[in-house]
View (tube, rainbow, N blue to C red):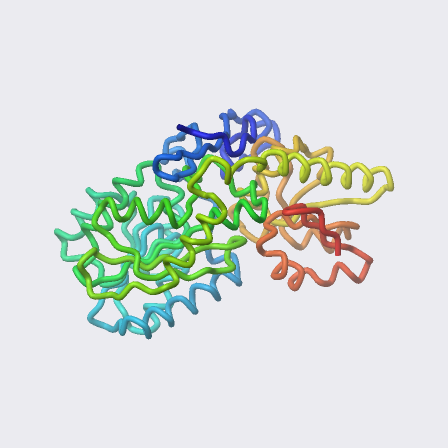
Length: 397
């Protein structure tokens, strides 16, 4: 049985930025509807879009976020220390993007290999001399790499599991490429925190599923993998870092695994009841934000956006906004500057535009980076500018 969780209507692909406003406004849209399966505990979107359509020209470069780089540098140091990784070990990352993580292992003299399907971001990694295979990861890719002597002593997958249309094939690939005593770490936004924090803008077609530890425990277990530890993280509004290994590997299971599962059971993430009411709360957020925007416009105040993230597109299109309501958005990624947000048609400018126009309000669309953005853009206080976030509720500061 499948239970409705969130219906965001018809939406374009969230990372499909266009060269003209007309093209952005005319982009095809698809139903964006997420449902819960009470058999496997997985939350999935109804409509699966071809990965080739999504990742052909991927505009997201992980290295553009300073806080994310700091997170990854600390991760590398922790893994090297905890698992005694050294120059004889191979660290493999699935969905390695522009090499944002593997660079830190390389600096410690540890061999690395990135696996990245998006050609443009993979080329950035290759240009930085980070060994990278331009491939989608799955069982066949894993077999190919193992045949070339590239089995993993440590395997990392950050925020990729939700992007996989066939999780079974992905996890079979993990079992193939992972050496007998190697560790697989996977990070993903925690569904428990997504629901509690009303983070509905994390729902878009590129995210095929939304993960609880209950669901991941079942998926990995079905393929001979065992979760032996888990950490709760602050990234992306609340994430989990799961540590897994082959079922008969030596790693001892910690109490943290049961603690998170207990919390999920208490929130009824294994039952339809745990998902009721989410849509009503989404509608309240939309209503509060649109009321703020109308009041600002009536008062002659300018509101512009910060952060042309995929989640921003989900939010703007759910709210039905267009360029008339939000003059422009600024972003630090050169790959996005000068392009237009899909659906809304809002133009993206370099962050320097903020100093030129001096808006009254800066709408921080990637709310998970609120503190980082407020620190970087603190100068808007010089003209009385204020920061705004809309999720999980309207905040003005």
